[in-house]
Each structure stands twice: as C-alpha cells, then as structure tokens.
Image (cartoon, rainbow, N blue to C red; front, side, top):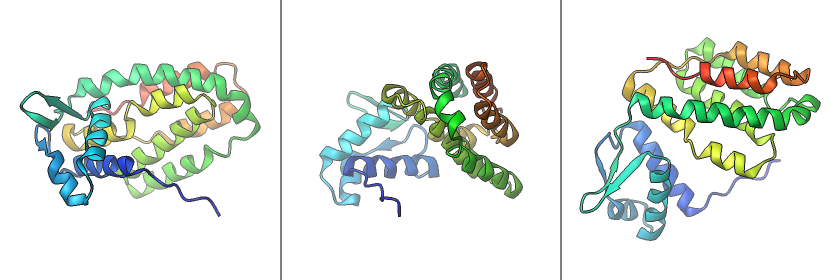
Length: 207
C-alpha cells in the first residue's frame, strides 16, 4: 500500500485558505484575518502567518501596511502572464525527462484516461485537476527539484480554477493532445520539447 502523505501544519492551513478562496468563501478584495483563522482552526497565529506568506508569493493574496491581507483581484493578464513562463519550464522538463518517460510512460497515462472521463461527464473541475496532474508528473519526471519547485510556484491549478470562477474562462481538457504527447515520449520524438511548449501555450483558458 502507498505511504500516506503527511502535510505539515503550515501546508494544511495553506490548503484551507486556498480552498476558501477557490470556493468563494473569501472573494476578490476581501480581507483575510489571520487571528480569525487561527481561532477557527485552533492553532497559533505563527503557522497561519507562514501560510499567508506563501500564498502572497503565489500572488493569491496581497498585503499592505495598515490594511492587512486581502484576496487579490485576479485579472486575465495575471493568468496569461504565467503561460509563457510555464511553457518554457515544461519544454526544459520534457527534454530532461524524455529518456525516463520513453522507458516507462505509465505515470502519464492515468491522467489521460481521467481527462477522457471528465470530458464525457462535462466535469470542468476534473479537467483542470487531471490536466495539472499530467503536467506535474511530466515535470517531476525531469528529476530536477529546482525546476519542479519553480513550476509549482506558478499556482497553476488554483489560478485556472479561479479564472473559471471569477473571469468566466472556459477550460478545455485537450485529452487527445495529452494522449499525443504520451505517444511522442514513447517514441522519443526529437522535437518533444517544442511539442510540449506549443501544447502548453495552446492550453491557456479562453474567455
């Protein structure tokens, strides 16, 4: 059986706040009060403060002197700006991962199957989740911790979910494109980096 993932208290608090933002509990421009979260979760304010700092790095919240912490007003530009950066990172990841994935592409296949199922069910949240899972496994396969950390710092899943909720963007799964990438890795396509880059740029949610 797989070993269960144990999250630190800070990570649990961060996920709690992210879920609150994605679900609409805290809306754009609304203040997030550190002390209230600490009382609600029955924790000290220190891990709450640490979690909020991480979310500020992800650009989900912003702080100002004498005004406290507020949920950022997400714009289409905020989301669009991340895609060229993400495409460049994933191009590098694909080039580093090609030999490993050519030998065993099984880490990517479950996400492709799940994307087809999400398409059939009209599950936009599932499309986001499984698309991000596919690309996370691709980046992880590169075996470069700095690259993975930088990619994770873009907050792709959260920003995509928020763009759908707040901006009315439409998420497409591109299941067939993801399946084509699996095949490209399997055959060690010499253009795999460029293929992944073009795919990512084409996956930006559209209004």
